[in-house]
Image (tube, rainbow over all chains, first blue to last red; front, top):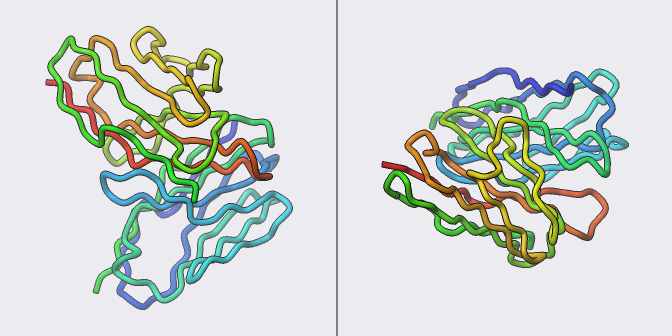
Length: 113
Length: 117
């Protein structure tokens, strides 16, 4: 059974710092991995999707890496801003035909002005 | 593109009544839609998966007679909470997966907060 773990559960950093959020998964046989952002009381916004054949994806100040063999992904946020404060969730899909995304518990990020 | 809407965004109802939540993919067709439930400060719990024109597949422990799901078209799925009770109060989020495109990316709605008095 696939399990997804995110560390740390919560993180607070001053504005302007670069930071890394971690995601690990127990079964390396994944099809893709997605990083999402969730603001309080809101739905999920897809940030980045990495296919199993890819090593990283970039969007603006965000960079997500994937090391499938070791079951790890990181989300790197450069030059953090207070507007980046949210909960960040990673989720994996087992196969192309697989219906389910398996979610981690999320990391609550607070950027202090 | 790839916008998913939910209606209503919040609802308060009395115990014993039924509540319907709509989920629409606004600019794409979704063969598959998902319904999640989220408790405060917890991750999403998948309740059921629905494919257009067929019966929904419910996760273990989810009562299908209580949470009725209908996926009548490629852009609309509904979740009806029947005979709601206070323990059904939660944040419900739907998600839609694009019919086209190579990566089966899922897009999420903004959520519906249900409060049962």
